[in-house]
Image (tube, rainbow, N blue to C red; front, side, top):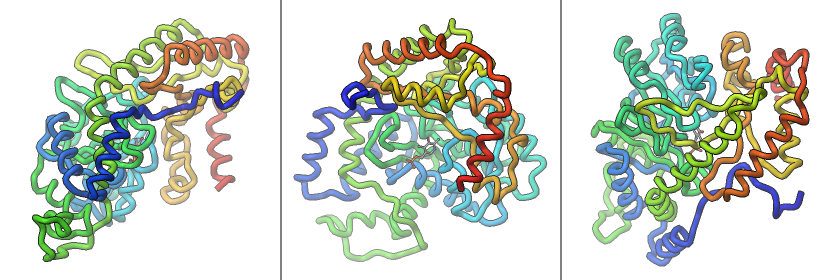
Length: 411
Ligand SMILES: *Cc1c(COP(=O)(O)O)cnc(C)c1O
């Protein structure tokens, strides 16, 4: 397969407007945190419908700042779904606290709120917060998440890395809980290369996160080299270096203007995938949402009905690659990774739903610059592979355990 015909798993949707915005920023002479970051924050807060938005250099940084502002530290625990990227649980460990992993709902793949309650009740440490992840852009059942949080007096921080724009009962994700973190990583729904935004309606939290994102220096430290700034500042805390650049913000503002049109294209591609795949006995199409839900469609994650396949998921991804189509897996559940197994003693059977579902997951290309021909090619190729490998593998269900053992050995 030549590079020309290879359809990658993701291709960022960047046009002339983004290029011009970056060039204008470079010509302005102000390239790091400055007026473009402030304008991007205002635009983002208005779009989400929230009082404050703080621009940061990653979603990971945003999650870290949010937990830090809640005062979470050693001896504390935070509930995190096991079906997520390691960033969601890693930030808890930055603060010396313990991530308590939670199994997923078998339909939505979002955090299982009943399992969260059980783990909360049985946790030896003081559970302070919960980080729901809106998997693939499908909102978590926030009424139930908030119900649990209220009942046990814990805070909610949204991992909204996939969730732009995600709607739930007339509100956008980014307005729930104490704070929410978005990602502008290269593959995410809008991108600045690397970047993120943390939103909150709590002014004290916003001030703390702003201060800590730039070395713990007192307000508006970035202005100290501008005409309206002053050389004087005070360090009030040992902060972090998490600020976004104006180069990235200039890109982000154009991307945010295009957020809805890029979303409409991804939603149309997702609808076409489901139309083509839903009658296929060996596939399970993803949950599309229901009343009051706007799915952001960051990912289109198919599930294989493994008893209908003669090959496993890894072989399928290899064959897609050989046919010129990039695919991926979201996610290898955290409890199967060597670090989480060794450090916290998690076993595959502690998370029966996620462990069983993991070998079924395959994410297909889903990005706004995909052409209709590319979408057709993905559909035709997947359906052709379904036919080519129809059959039955005897030991399909033990596969995820074998894979997680292999992961430990590889470490
Ligand atoms: C991408 C991602 C992150 C991290 O985003 P960065 O901007 O790269 O830090 C966090 N959580 C989830 C669920 C993600 O997919």
